[in-house]
Image 1: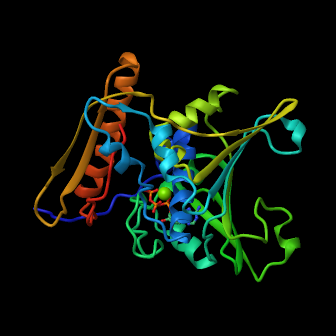
Image 2: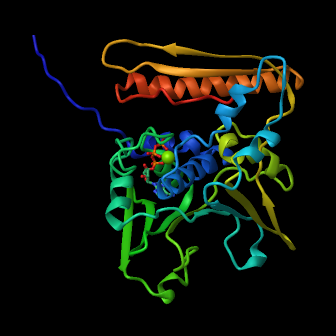
Length: 329
Ligand SMILES: Nc1ncnc2c1ncn2[C@@H]1O[C@H](COP(=O)(O)OP(=O)(O)OP(=O)(O)O)[C@@H](O)[C@H]1O
Ligand SMILES: [Mg+2]
């Protein structure tokens, strides 16, 4: 009898297929990964909790009463500093930029050259060290890499107040990153970037391989996308979409308000897989079905997607205390 063990390799084309499968076909999911990163970093910069307080206020609306998130938001607005995130989408050549170019630009913490290397070198690794030990919605340590690998000509520009670092990702033939860093950069070093000397921040730019939704549908698609809803509903986030289309530059705010409707039920359940894994508390919120089957199916899909994500974390044995997590479906 012969016994042995061996470690299978992954072929480059399989690696590329997996990267493309993760995000390459979805414009909204691609942007959600980047906007989530930006928002989490901005919260860390200002020492804010992951939850804006909106979900907590929603849970206080008694059964049978109407939920009106735009009213609840006014109770929260204006206390913490505004967190600005700009999404740029270029579809026309006439603006002196590459058609299909997409960028997400924030004014958050930025990353040092070393932080950026840590963020990109171990795809799927634990990123709690980078998040100052905070657990938030950043769970898997591959959202940023997935975006860079799924699209084309991907670049991360980041300034932490001290170092300006630019990293370019390329398939050649395996995935690799070229990084350059300028310490104490001056204005001239920012000239070809989407950043400024005035604030720390990060810009992630790529040429999209997925379909870019048309204007104006793109606005509601982004605002309603389940992974972006809580950020788009946060009154202290200024999420702006700037589109460079043929003959026009459109600038719009991406804002989500839950449709007004009576609360049927709200309740919490704790999933406890046992062993070393921490229990997961999930809060459910149900509104009257004013919106027909389509809405309900979407809501179900959102719940399933969130639970799947959590479940994957639990199975990977990397979950710590997740008791503050909420779903907004
Ligand atoms: N815009 C940003 N500003 C500051 N830090 C960022 C930014 N984007 C990413 N990072 C850092 O890079 C790390 C890796 O990001 P990535 O999206 O790959 O993983 P994650 O957010 O930790 O988990 P997930 O896979 O769930 O998105 C983050 O944990 C964060 O520390
Ligand atoms: Mg992320």
